[in-house]
Length: 395
Image 1 (tube, rainbow, N blue to C red):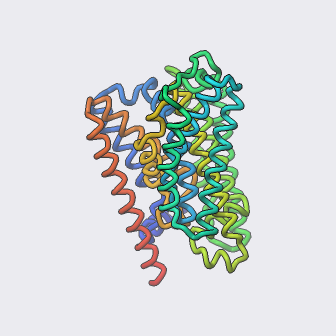
Image 2 (image 1 turned 90 degrees about the horizontal axis):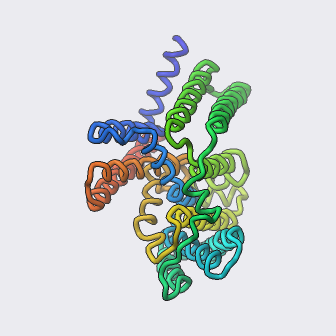
Image 3 (image 1 turned 135 degrees about the vertical axis):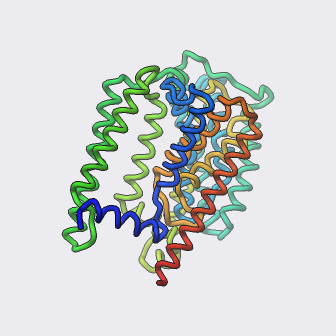
């Protein structure tokens, strides 16, 4: 059998076993691009794509925290309200109270850590369901946000402040974007090669060098081509690049550290994780803290992008879009399955749908209905693949 035939056979076997990977998300993006480009040729222009990616950063950062919580089989419904509180702290402390903007950002993220620690404590110590705890947190944090903003209800952040300039006007130089693209592709290929070598040394099934090099080359072409195309207008936004850095750091933490392995173990089976000596309570508290901290960071980025914080900051659509992005990107509602890249892929799908429907002049009502349909499809696919894997395991 040829190496190519072996690769194809392994892919077919994985699909039959219910392991579809990121194929549905990638296919959805292709379909979205084709449909909206046919309806409005502006959709795939470099300027529009550059703006679309910048819009992904804030919601994507919040969604990354949701991915972490889903991996342990929990949920956090308060991320939208937490992002609104963080935006309020940034604006009131940095503008009205005269704090240095950097200190206001730290205070906002620290508030997120404290809130997440409280959620984790209530979940682990009192055994309260995370759904109830974070739903109460959603309502309570909404009140905190309104209290911080006060009677004004809205606080503008000066356009000339560095954080607004960062969120609205900062783009990577073309040469730096190319360097980062090349380094990413090289690191990805080297990681796969090392993993294949370790598996081969342990007499486990592993991918050959040629398929890995092909995947790395395709990634390199895609990244460099994307940087070139975006560079035709504004280029790659620094805020989006920061979000990608968050995703990569989370991915490395989940796949290369003991903490990350513990997260997957807890999501797979809490009882089995306890028997394996994992301190489940610490893992749960740490995940809730990271989720709320990332929600606060997303709220700061959203306020900086808007140049203001108001009573609608972190509103329901932000909360639901962040959760939907995590699920659409491939994070399982049943815990123990998914990756940090689910936030990246999912939020691009969400924002692409929103931007495309806006370009064809459809109302927000249609946007919510379409997004809800895509979310339902993602959840149904997750349940179906989970049932298929269970059936394959019993066979």
